[in-house]
Structure formats: C-alpha cells, structure tokens
Length: 465
Image 1 (cartoon, rainbow, N blue to C red):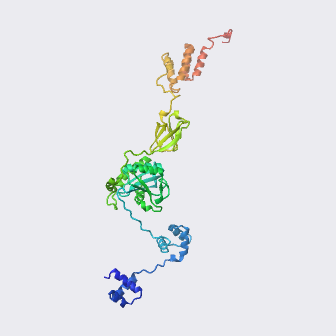
Image 2: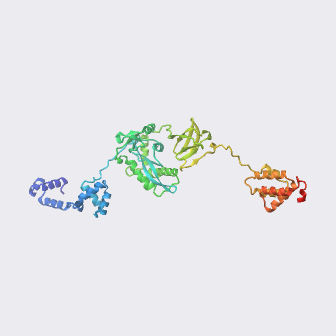
Image 3: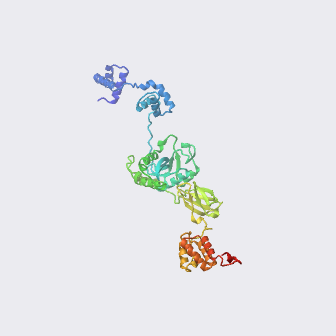
C-alpha cells in the first residue's frame, strides 16, 4: 500500500503534466499502479457544485444585507417575495461558499487550578409562583475548577441584591476563589469593559472584605465564562420544568435543595466525577471567609407620614406615633426591615412580598379613646333585677333587641322606675310586654297616660273628664 506522502507526490506530478514513465522513475512506483491511483482519484473527486442559487447571487447578497445577516429571514424572503424554494441547509452552505457567513470558529479550551476562579452571571427565567407566571432574575455562581453550582432567584437584581447573593453563595461554598469573572454588567462595573473595566467602589469594597477581585471578559466573548452559562439552560430544562412554587422563599429553598441533590451530585464526563467530589479537592485552595462577615443591608431614609407609617417598596410600615414628622433611617435586608431613630431601634418588621399593603404593630398604636369591652351585666341592670318577675322578663326580651349590654336602655328604664309611680309604671309595662313594645319612648307615653289627671288638676277640669 502506497503511503500518503507518495500519493501526494504522484498527484502533484500528474497535475504538472509529467509523463507516467518519469513519474514511475522518480517515485519507484509501477506505471499500472500510478494509472490506478490517478483513475481512483478522478472517481472520488466530486464534480464542482452547480447550485441554482448562483444564478440569484446578487439578489441573495442584497437580501442578506437588508436582513443584517439573519439567514432565517433570507430564507423566508426568498420563498415569500421571490418564490425561490430551497432547503435552509443549502442556503447556509451557499452563504459560506460566497463568504457571506463565516464557518463556526473553534472555541478555546480553558483550564483552571483549584481556587483560581469562580464565574458569576444572571439570566431571566419564567417561573410559576402562586398560580401566576412571573419573570424572575436567576443568579448563579460556579467554581471554575470543581463546577460546584449555587443559584437563587430575585424579583429584580441591583447591586444590593448582587451583594446579598454573593454573600450567601460564599457561605454556601464555605469559601471563595481569588477571582470572580463577570460579564460587562453595570451591576458590578462603573465604567469600561473587558481589561479596561472599572469596578464600582461599592462592589470593590464588598469583594475586598472576602479577599476576592472582580474581572470582566471582553465584549462578545461569552465562552470565556462558559462554566456559568451552561447551568442556566440546565436550570430551565430540569429544575423549573413541571414545577410550581408557593412563594419566592419556597422557590429559593427548592433551588438550593436542587443544587445539593441534583446539580452538584451528577457525575460530569469532563471531570470524571461529580462537582461535590471535585469540591473536596478544591476546598483547601479556597480563601477562608472572614471570622465576622460584613452585614449586607440597604440604608434608606424616610419621613414618617401623618398616619404614623414609613413608605418602603410601595408598602407602609408602622412606627411609634410619637415619631410622626420625624426623619428615620431604615436598614432593609432581603427578609426584614429595621427602623432606627437617633441610633436606637424603634421598629422591626418582616418584609411583605405583596404590594400596596399596610403593616401595623399593635405596640405602635395608643388606645386613647377605646375602652376594653366589659363582661357581665351593667350596674343599672343589677338595680332593676329582682323588683318584679314581669320586669325581669321584660329585661330579658329587651336585651335581645339592643346592642352589647344595653347600658343606655337600662339607664333609661331605671330612670322611668325612679320617676313615675310604681303602680302606673307596672300597669304600662304589662301593656308593653303584652303587645311587644320595647321602644322606651312609647313605654314612657303609656306611663304618662296612666298618671294623667292625678297631679296638678286645674279648677273645673273635672267637669271635662
């Protein structure tokens, strides 16, 4: 069997027009073998492509520029506007042949030492929470060597949420790598990009407390942080698929458990082991956490409104009424709100997930005009009871028709008993009880009818009776 260098030499001599005898003399190969090789090469060489798209080359160039390089739109316009039906794969091959589209470039391979780098990024995900589909920001941090993953979800993602997430991720990993690679997000950067990126002083100070330095990759180079890009699709297709959650706290508890039980336990082919096992090898190289981790909170200044509340995130939280009109400082974390006045803690609330809510603590409201509800009978009722069985029966029926203990009605009835003669009063009471009259004004009129003419008679008035 002829070696590949001899085959290439024969091919070049034949293309130069060298006679078979001379080729045989230079290579030491028989002329019949040379003929067979030339014949086989001719049969294996495919004919030059004669795609019918070459006839529409100018049109395709014009459409490609109009569609800004989108091959899918070029394919649609050729069929819809010009009636040119062609397979999409044929179109993309033609675009590569005429150098309108570059062939896929080979991506770089990156290797990392234990504790050298970790990668951080965010991605929007659609999540079903409490029966409603919401768009949340998924934040993920991955150790580049062991590929250990930590993820969490947030309603929005600012520098405050970024610091909260990174602090929680460092506690989860029980350490941190020396470098944290990010894309060119304004959450971390103040200006610039790539090697010229300027880290925000707020984020740089936070990272310095953990012995970490941020670094940004150059623009349009996402494969540089491929360790953290791949888990986002894994989260969407594995963790979120077919799952619903009761609240944001339930979602974050579930994704943390998923990282422990699924993502970090699954054996990765490139590692030959699970991230959990590789983490044990990387752990000694991670930077230790400070003995006292700096607290992460957002400082807010609010004026207390006339109703005794401060406004935070479209919700109202109560403070003591004596602070109405005062300027207070509130420290907000992801789960609670602490309110201070002149350095002293005056209120502490759990943050409410819903919007336009009013959260009130009983200790912040003084009961100036409210009296405690009393139990049992009133003093007026006690004075009325036991005088007469008819009166006791009337009291029982009267109490079912008045609110509460009926103190006002008892006072009025006691006034009637003390004001009018006993005989006239009980006669009128008997009529009222018989006809079901419990209006004390009408009862008093009946009493007055009974005593009419018994007092203060004028001279000659008996003649009209």
